[in-house]
Length: 254
Image (cartoon, rainbow, N blue to C red; front, side, top):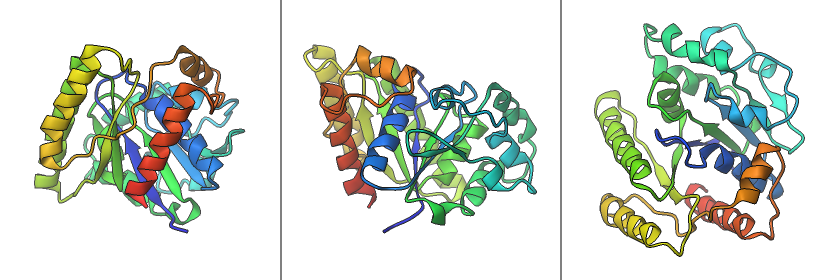
């Protein structure tokens, strides 16, 4: 079975269901008997917070700043079956700590090489900015998933992100594989959803960027389940959406 596939979830616009998507994707992969590590790169630490009592205060920040730190000291087990390297608000300092470090965006990629053989999938949850932490997640990726809420601000975030990827490819010799753009928090009956999906297809389809056929419906129950660190009802509408998304994602990355 293939090991070490790194999938980075990114959008510089917040509030698009990105952390929820990482969380549920990890659970769906565990159900399929894959081994999964989640890396929380967001100082808000939302994903870390819903994973239960993670008492260890060592985070990605320590990993990036300390060459002597063993990765085993960072990895925490969760009751949901996947492992996590946690975040906390002090990770905000990482942006300044690494700003003068040569190759700062590439450190995480080198660190991850140590543990790729231990997992089928490594999922990275990025913060909603394009600073050092997010660019570190981009450089470490084998594939990118871009969650997008069907609203103008979120779509504009995608356009800025794509332009950033083009610049990085041009100047830093890094080629990005975009697994796809995933529409989240969707009310499929609205005209705006249909208009935005058509727009995404017309703009990004021309540059061979996939728009996932699956969209994730808006669900208060899903938000509540994530907030409580619980798996969603797999028979619910949004549960079916996420199951279909993961099936579609696997066809791209395997």
